[in-house]
Length: 113
Image (cartoon, rainbow, N blue to C red; front, side, top):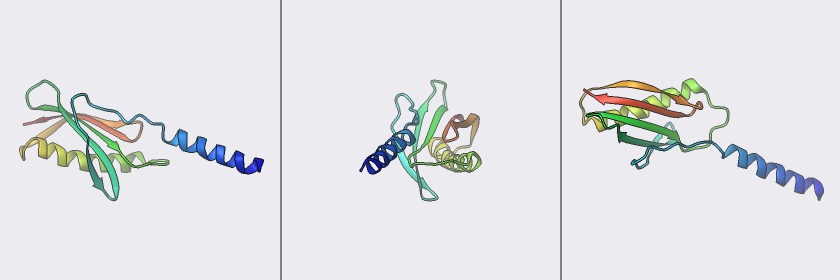
């Protein structure tokens, strides 16, 4: 009985720790969920205050254990490209700054040109 109780407690604590990572947010934005390769992402886009310049945040909405940063970056860039094109209404865009936070969350600033 003690072993079973201890196993349940350890399992609960492990799940609690796994679920504790910063999701991130962009003030004044709403999350839109998109799937890439069967994985869900929350995408947020908001203006920076400079004309035709935007911030983008892409957060994995599915649990990831031991993520591969290169693969996560490639997936996030695929999602980012779609939303940058959509935000710029088909016009060209350029990324000013981009990168992964904590190996999972993609943040960037882009400009429609």
